[in-house]
Image (tube, rainbow, N blue to C red; front, side):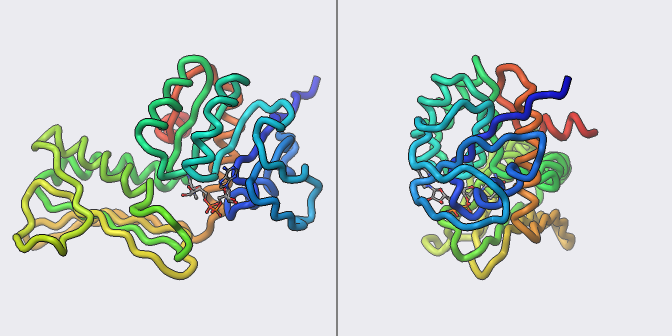
Length: 262
Ligand code: NAD
């Protein structure tokens, strides 16, 4: 007997990511795209049959997985319905506050929740390598630089923050935790040991670049990931949607996907 397709709803469906994702899900026989949700009903032909955009997730027919590339406000307002329907949720929206994130994570006790500030495999690997490098280079000065297209509204990126947390955790196993510094214009003093600088560049159409730089005495080390196209995040999200539909309750991250591959 053939398997039933996974019923997917996309939140933020009229956005840059939501449009790519809707098109991918609609073309993939493993899925049935049952709802596209966005507060802006911008319809455009994508050469494939898909449901019309609805404004309220409450009006969506039954779905198994909610794929969320929207805004922190939309993510927060999805909490109740995801809770009530007991569905799997991929939270890929960035800039979600700590309080809402905690509420999202608490849903993991009864349904599968996947949180990924970045759904690319390359970034997942970068996280692992960053932890290794940060433990070895704990005494070097670490700086993180991210670059994104001119329309990105949050800064620094969720990925830069996640990378900084990873570096800090690994570093803290050797030294004490560092402070994150976003602006050095307000002080006149040399760089202390215990800080990680995080800088955000914005311009053009850059899909996303993250660099972690370590500066030692007369040597430097760098890890860099460049997303050349937004499609990589969408491909990652499709992979996660098919994976999470098979999982039981829990809070999952990209690390788990890497574990499955390696
Ligand atoms: P976008 O601004 O193009 O799209 C966001 C969409 O959400 C818009 O169409 C907007 O109308 C819609 N929206 C806003 N409020 C809403 C509401 N209350 N209900 C329903 N829809 C609502 O942004 P984007 O570039 O597509 O990115 C969306 C999010 O995904 C951002 O947070 C971005 O940082 C994140 N993102 C994550 C990854 C990843 O790999 N995890 C990759 C790219 C982008």
